[in-house]
Image (cartoon, rainbow, N blue to C red; front, top):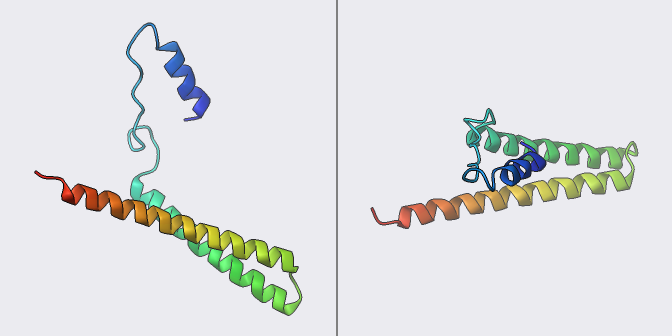
Length: 101
């Protein structure tokens, strides 16, 4: 759902009815959390593979140095993003485990 569509629902619902509740990914036809996580891991793998290919192409003289550096930076940023997602998930899990029952 686009941001404009959400804003339109909130604006039109202000005076007439309670604010609309955002739909969850599974009920709205979106992908599940596991599928999103799998896609993130595949993205990290593909950027790593692309960076390796770009570096080997640079060493062989087939690829420009700039393209190899861009591929390396993309792989680094993708890995950093995945690590931050993992850290947030671990913090959320630890917070849930600390909750009294």
